[in-house]
Length: 462
Image (cartoon, rainbow, N blue to C red; front, side):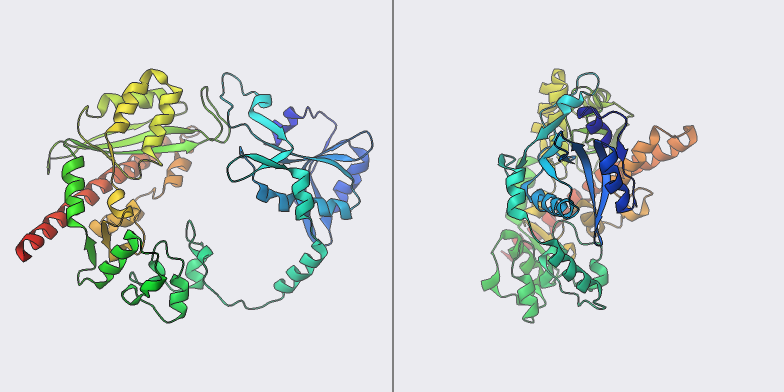
């Protein structure tokens, strides 16, 4: 981003460029010697800041540019900018105007990267709807605060020897905090703390309610998922299964041959190839397990490309995926379906065929996300990695590549590996992606087994 912004702002030698761990005096000295400072480090008391770009004006004040590798830097950034401005003010560095440099979401690469189209110099930050609502300088005035008082409180915190662990909703929001296991014991599968979409679970635990079987119903939101969790906790086998809903889902939606499909992809901040926008993805791999009829031997197809393999990916997939039957994916709206629709925009000659593939997709995560199927071992989670350990003895941890980001990292290495290393990396990538589709086979057949079992019990009891 720094190098691109140098081109955008037409910054040529001589200019000052700061480095990590620079003493604050170095940038202060550069203020009097250079008209442009890049990544300058300033120090006020024991607070260090870095300013991406300072450009001197005729009146010896400075225009300040903050850079963002996002398309819509949010208004929440204003507090950080205001704190940076406080430091510059205390160091008596006059500021003329404040700007944000960010990516242009509408830019589509054609040929060489055009920095003047890729990047935007803005006087606004954006609200949650990605609308430019208030100017940066107005927001900074609103957010200005006395950092001397903040620094005093920060120093006091540094002197505290012991901090009692107290669980909050932030501990497990999004992904679990990496320090979670150090702070808290892992709760039992039916712990009230595993209730999904529950704002009152911490309050219930503090009141002495530990298990889902004993929850205070008045403190529940009453979602289907919560109902499924509580019923599973109360059932002797730890399973909640909506037999009628699942019978309808299987028999009304799924047809053989079933194609179990999974993609791997890389995300690029800066579009590397023609037809791509900022933060577009490049789908470089797929695995396809085909089940022609129930219980039939699986047929496996796979693809792994290098560099700009988008069109080769499309062609290979269309040549190998069955023309009829259900295409089974896991979390299709945020993954495989979205990837294919993006490819259809980049390669419109394949749009009709790719849309037809999307139209046949069924999301295997739906029975779990809707609460129609819940096993207490899920502990509030329904990722494919979690489910396959419940329905089988398979573990992703047994593979050399266990996570999607590891797959991306290894794919990046392919371009810089010799033949022997490439073969090893390719093998690991094939094993990981194939595990995703085979895991779907195991989970789907686990659902079928439960459906058969619950159906027999239902009819025998009637």
